[in-house]
Length: 397
Image (cartoon, rainbow, N blue to C red):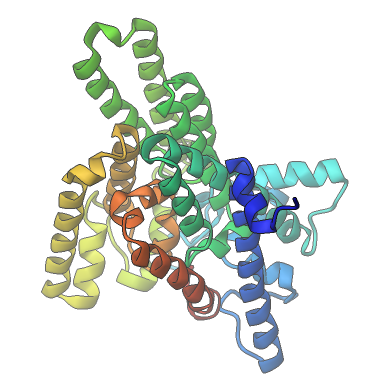
């Protein structure tokens, strides 16, 4: 008896099901991106990220991809660009080298010159492949912490989410997620040296890897309390080494930027140059950016709102249903959110920067409510074109 396609898919290995879901999600995102590009071109819409050669490949690689392309072609500047008042202007030092280096390596293997739109096209392929791997690893993480139903829904909500089109543009997000989810899965399996190797590479792909080091520290304390002598010395040592290596790698880029440019604070000044359009010139202080942004635009009410929001999130992390996701997932996700609050100025790119906490999509509060699951899935698909318009036509991504 011949099985129907849906029945065959249900009988297929989980990795096949996840990859089919991912492939379908790429078709949806491609339709939204392609349709909006065609509409904008025919109607003469202005692109927020200007392109001298406005093709679909360059459209897919708006904003950050321009800097990654510059890094792949020219490397990093030894002198920072300055305005007339001596303030640092936006420049490639805000972007880490692994993704553009990988694209350059692929281009070299293929014998392709990165001039023109070749970088955007190759970057798109690299991102799509890495995104598929990241989705598979996310499914595996949630499978091991919350079960098969939660894992499948977490993967679906991840690859059909409002910002999932970023998984197929020339950005470092897909590669970062692949590395971080791989490192987190290795930590779940107590393979801490694998976590270290992936985490060190991730540290030079996108910021935020210090959350992994924090997760390892919390995991070590919890395991020591729960297992005592059952927590073997070799595992303790590998966990400590992994945490130290990831911490060192996560703190290394500002030091490298200072050394190469000969300017103390080169990386921090570069990052702050992106704040000017939102909050003016600011001196950085940890844990203040969200309050500065809210206070600038909403006054005292905004500051209070941020305080309430952070309190609600902290309370949510203490709930038993959240803690059921496991110490590694909860401590990593909480650490990453703490990183965003500590150093990031919240603006349009915030939803994209929340992608690394996708393991929280396996939360029982989501999976246990069928209407909520389907609502989130439908909202993700419907909001993708809204996100594309806001980020690709209106302002910063």
